[in-house]
Length: 345
Ligand code: P6P
Image (tube, helix red, strand yellow):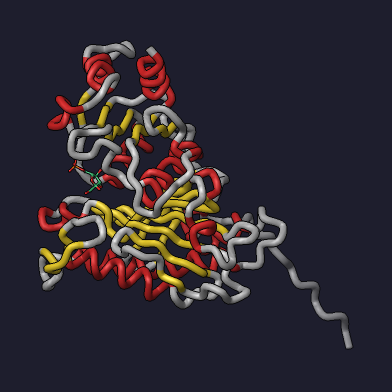
């Protein structure tokens, strides 16, 4: 038989179109950096992405379905639970419970830890989350968010839930948030930069939209609830005055949404500083260390920013309790260096 005609091949420049990179593909690529990665982490991550797509769909229709308003109960924080809080919490726990690699779940909405595959040999991770942060803003159509932190079981944690969960933020394997804003955006880090994915509703996929986000060294905004100013301890009032009066060579504008994920997302992209200082009502700070400050601080540092409790780096704090609170100052290098200079006086 005559030789078959030679088949021509054309090499594809890969990825041909980075904007078609889904979060699953990105996580798979990232975890190849870990020599013994076996796909467990990306399998776990798919539980988070599925749940947040379901939450996004519900948030988008909040005014049209009986999902607004109070659920008629209060959570472990003593906060009135919104119906969407309950939905988000239950959806995340349900979706993650299918992942054999997850041993424990800690949620802002639950007093106690939830044992998922706790005790099984394949369970290696704990997922800590605030299912719907800023939920009091839902009824007025302001952005809200899901914040998550992923911890790996340290040696000897198998029969000690506290050892597994109460780890300093420096030990996070990954962390991120989903912002239900003008678009739905997932921002995460696994220790190799910060990457943003925007949900394409028509295909239900998170697509890479902001690769390797870097926080500007200085920004135009400071973000704090100034209604509590009179109860801020030193150096917060003087620091805010310094910013406002041009202490860094320019005047600042104040932006405060009252939803941590939204206020931080702006700080991440535009620069500046977000603060929740100690107040008379919250002398230890209002924001929770494990599932608000730690994941945000991990993202901030990975993007070139700084996060402190006013004295120490957030990621160095060793938690005593799942729901403990902390003062929180996070943002750009220049604004945080000025804060540290004033705090040291
Ligand atoms: P305040 C929302 O309730 C939240 O936990 C964060 O999302 C937000 O940054 C903060 O509280 C707002 O608190 O006291 O200014 O209303």
